Amino acid sequence: MKKGFTFSELLVSMLIIAITFQIVYYIVDNSVESYKNSRINLQNLYAESSISLLFDILENELKYAGSGGELLKELYKPVFVPGDQGSYEQKGEVYSQVTDHCKIANSIDYYEDSQKKEFYITYVVTYKNFFVRNGDGTYSPLYGGDLGKINWVIIKNKLSSSADGYYTRIAKLDANKISGPGNYPGEVTTSDIFEFKEINLAKTNKTLSLRDEDKYVYPLYEKSVAFTGYPSVMIKQTKIVFEKESGKIYMERYFPTSDSTSNIYISNILENVEDFDINAMYYSNGIKEKPLSEVDSSFDLSSIFALKFVLTWNAPWKYKSKEFKIIKERVIVLIPNL
Image (cartoon, rainbow, N blue to C red; front, side):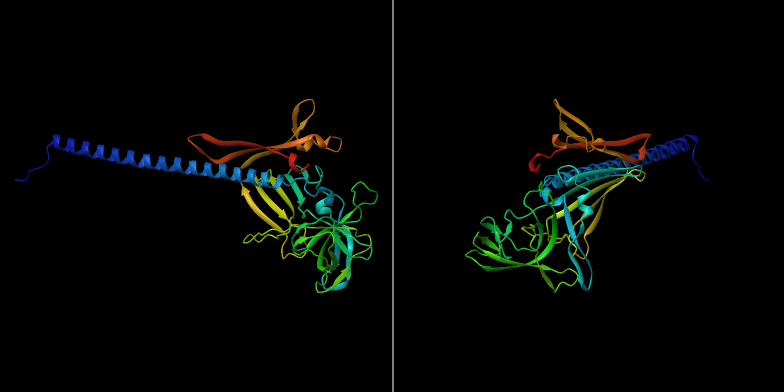
């Protein structure tokens, strides 16, 4: 005779199966929730680190704000047709990409419309020494001291930026030390005599003499930038762009050296940004601040001593109807070069 399960045994079996399934469901549910929490935490951490990276970039660039400002505000660039040697004009046209964005300390500018916000930092770093034109068309250092290899330079026609008719121009030179006790590159002296020839960028194996009005030559500092692909010459414009509709922030680096294979580099920094505010901090019967967008030509720009950046980031997801938002700010002092 075949023996079957009793009703009690069947109930016990079903209870055990139910408990087992409940335990499995609990474990799986906890694992999924843990995964979701871990993913959200990692994404938030990534956003936090991206915001910090943006602020670090701004802080690094703004430490140069005002550097070489007098060399940039009336800057000209050569114009030429590649391959046409005769087309090269030494003082060609105003370098508007630079001069149009030097509102504060000849270095900082801000633009905003309904689509985007743009923040500019433009600066140039030269060697501490510069050259003065001699009566015979040669040049000598104004001071003794260390000097690196001369390549790109900015040339002044007058020493004071407040003098009538003052302007500067950027050029690439071939420098040759023809006499004197100093070493080049290395320790130069005021007794050293240099001959400068301007490289014709239309045809780079040709050179031109500098003009009588090219009185003062400021060699641009060059640093090692291995593996970055960036030009080594220390003249640069960094633009931070916030696109309002897409919530995207990216950085555009522009190098005003026309012999580079590429002089514009774009890097994406952050998405899902709700807002990116920049306030000018200034002295006026105490410390005050106002949006940089409201700073115009009537404002006392010399009173600005710092900028405050405030970024609001919204996560593109929700978790159990909870929204995730990050608001971070950083104040960056501008004092050093102003």
